[in-house]
Image (tube, rainbow, N blue to C red; front, side, top):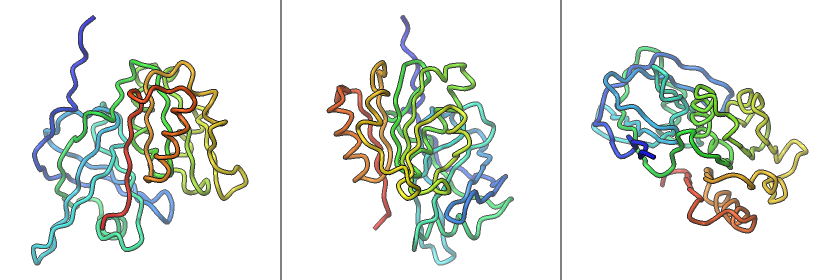
Length: 232
């Protein structure tokens, strides 16, 4: 058996990205598709940093997971518009097709999946975005059988890429639409057979989900966590 190369250890320098597409799937988010010349190929689960520089020199930057498959000619980002979020508000309200953004990536070598092992992904809200890259990669590789996803969100409108998730039969729980919260009982039938476990969402969600997976028998060393929250 040969080792699979891990381009995750390589991170590109700052580059100029051209905005090729802007869409708003709902009132709280924007999807940007960027062309990044000579970019390093990413693995599903990695992220980029997007940097904004004001005329007075003030700089703000945030990290965003990649939603596109590695084979995509463009990089896709689903960006949730946060209240008082200076970067997310600008990207959602101001950025237009043809604009140029400073980006750096791909970043991350731990929270990645190459569609070669059975996995279970557990996501809270926009934490599902890196799993969309994994889903798209698995579909292209003909290995959707290796991927299981469980997602918790407030309403259907708050589920990023709901149609793609529904197309593969992902488990989706809507906390404000009658389904109730995701529970350990929901995850119990998804754990057996999985070798890798990925959890992404806000800190409170990831902490709870990891505890459930451990109780259900997932080895601690096989659980990979990515937490996010508003910047201070």
